[in-house]
Image (cartoon, rainbow, N blue to C red; front, side):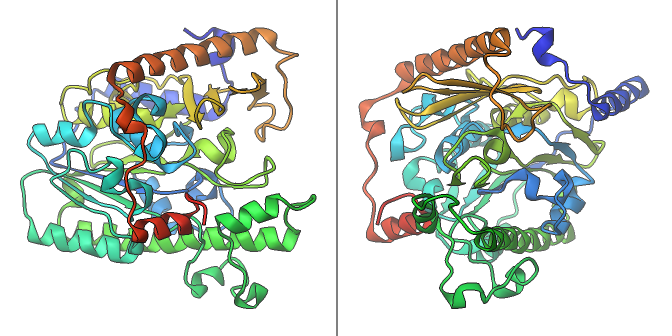
Length: 453
């Protein structure tokens, strides 16, 4: 249990949210009936602070912002990893990633996933994903009746999903959609780049991808010129805007088909992207901003729109979906259901979020409404940041706040040990071996920066 010192954050918006929830509770408004359908959409590599609904000053996300105004938005959602496999593994199992993944072995060891639970409850389960590390070969098709994982981009991917929905009318379905459109290589059409930068920069030879990032990091300081950095961010933002338009078209179609009104729509991202805020490019580190703070919103007719600022985790998504449907929770879930908060029956209470990166020599972190503690497993270095006084995590304060550092180190150790116990109980050695890769998939993963060329 966290001490009051770690829990208390005097933010005006929290008081406003609490007041709204108290009024909703007193009004005694009935909970909406469970939705017939669940639509879970994952936008890979989307850092939340590049969305208008999170305060970004560029118009990257007008359609998603419009949805957010009609949804319950969690502005302090924390991913359980800064890369695709661990974050999606936690999303589907409500477990910390090291308990259920191993290298490129993907999601293998946990006995129950969200799709399996929904399938047993009578939902048709369909997945349309943009290849990469959410392919079926990495375990993410478990529990799905139909799973397509071609690397085709958001426009064609969403079109395939629409065609499938037209051809398969069922009483209840769970639809999972995922796109890498925002991920490197940043390749939005030029008309979208023009909204934020210069599509002719570099005479057509400017390709900000993972290999470009690693080369830039090897240069003497600064890693990028200011112009380079602006154009990198412009192409990243262009990918968000392009994806936003494809998403808006999909939502319009669902509405026209009468599916949106009877669906729970959950929008997430799996991790963010760094542009030298902490000396790196891409998503190699575990700072809350810009690496781990992600998109999370729930949209459902009957849920009063509002913004929640307390810390939650992606591991909370599966328990929340099942609770809203009136179904039993996943076995052994570490996440909690946010359904009482969504229904306005309970004031949100921030939690300790846990994330991890890499293997035995990697990093772990815990994040509260106020603090972040980062721990390096190899060097045993511990760094503490006060994210209220220092949102950019620029000043390490463990020597100034040793009691806070010790308490959070205890929280971190408890979560790491719990994940280890789950891993030992369910893990098999073969799960740590990468599955065989075809030449096509290898080239795809190289393009995304997951494999060395």
